[in-house]
Length: 199
Image (cartoon, rainbow, N blue to C red; front, side, top):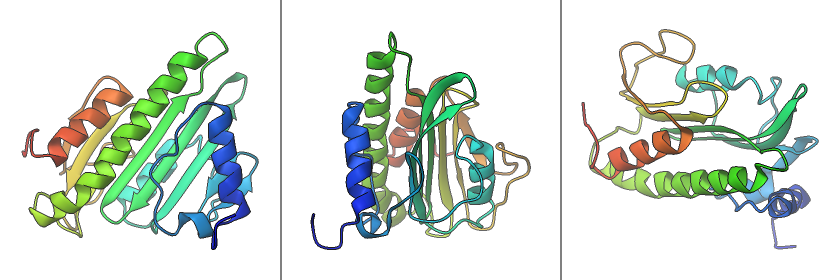
């Protein structure tokens, strides 16, 4: 095991590898801070609410009351199929993925979609320094991306001090909708590159 690396991080890597998933973007200190908080639920901070309640996490981040953290979890929802959850709150970037793991028949397609979405999140993380340097977003603003196949997917950018007006659809901010989780991530990546709308 690498120096400073937690056993839990190794378990997360094994869980993802078992299902054919790549490692999503992780903050620099994740290898030493990540803990398995519940079965198949890894996070750099303690939490009280299940990741299934995506809106809870989105509301907290948009309101500016969430510290930076990473959460990766594979959680079932009652009798339905499990979902992979990936939440990254890091400075002005807030990414929330919630995608079905897929049944046996649809597992290959679900794994492909999850890996494509993780790849797009890698692009978002890599683009953030450019976004901040060019002033498209201030360090005290935020870029929020919600990509889910279980609830509404959207992305939005907000300047400093702009707050949420309602649960997952804040008022007074620039919101851009797309139909699928991948489309919403692609649109956010295009905006970060300066290829999308600035209004």
